[in-house]
Image 1 (cartoon, rainbow, N blue to C red):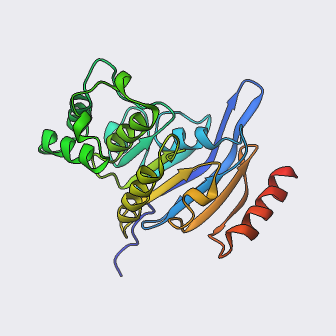
Image 2: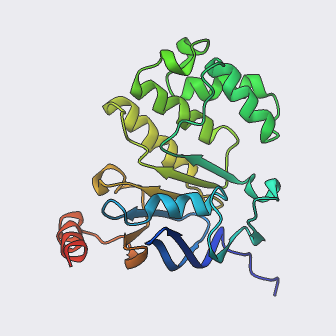
Amino acid sequence: MPPAEPPLVEARGLARRYGAVRALRGLDLTLERGEVLLVLGPNGAGKSTLLRSLAGLLRPEAGTVSILGRPLTRDDPDARRPIGLLSHQSLLYDELTLTENLVLAGKLYGVPNTEARARAALEEQGLLDRAEARPRQLSRGMLQRAAIARALLHDPALLLLDEPFTGLDFIAADRLRALLATHATADRGVVIVTHHAAEAWDLVTRIGVLAGGQWLLEVPKPDDINAFQARYLELVRG
């Protein structure tokens, strides 16, 4: 038999502290291809720290992360190449136009035909008419859509999304859900951090509830969102 393929993501024993606050406490996570994990939790639960650790932007004090079987280290940019990140910061440069931002990102990720791909990514987000605008000229919702275009530009195997629906109107939110449904194919995976389960409920395959830097719950998506939300409140209220 051929050897089994490694998980898309494998994190073991992740720990991170900010002063006296323990943001992650020996956290484990495995994500297979085709899975979409929804991570919920109260403020300060460690959700953004988890995403930054999975993206290779934050070095955990203990533990390891592997992407497609390759250890994720800050001095190995190729290990981060399969990752697309949407964070609270847009990761766009104010002095560049949207097209220039995406072309730059595309070149960093080795995307062929970068200008054509940049324009296609903007068109997917309904931003082609703002292609020559600079980030500071955009509304909050438009800036979020531009950041989404950047995260998806290189067709990453692993997409990490921190509150992706922030600032989006109904049309833009539906457009994002359609893109994520297409993206989450058999060989790709998504981790979505949000406070609002309903925004992504139809997309996800697994649910994780994080509090105090550790899992309170990590299960396949339940059938009933209302029953789950009642259970979630019980968990986070202790």
